[in-house]
Length: 178
Image (cartoon, rainbow, N blue to C red; front, side, top):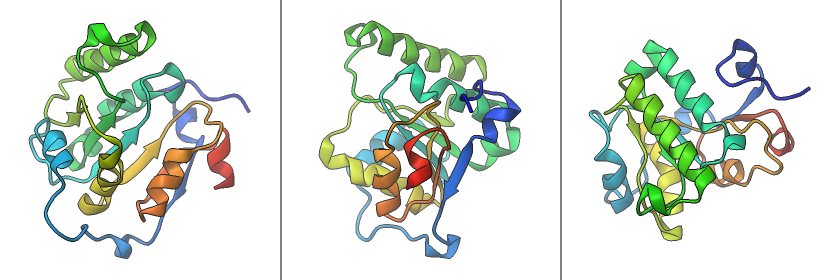
């Protein structure tokens, strides 16, 4: 079936969960990775479970639907933080027009719904930081989400699951076969 419109009840029916047992959660050994400090600087309570999405800021990735869903559930907002890793940016003006419009739309949703302090969107990360970013939901008893309207393959789901992170992913495309 075609992907559901973001923010609709039908959209929730298009997800599947890939998850280890909740008893398998554990924090990574050693000190907190530096990238976590960059993420935590956005959050009032960084120890809440992290709902992590990592993708380029593209309409197909449905980040606006994710922010809208997070904003619409007061219980979820009380219990968790939303962490959006939307690529790297120095300034909004330096982004490609399509990416810039998505990031600006995320900022507007966060502002319009009063989500400052509950949503993180770090500006920079290196390839070496990626595994540590995926480990954040593991350490906080959170989850990785891929809410793309259509995901051809689902590499981010494989990467998160390989580290033992519980995953929720779209049923539209590759993640169904993971």
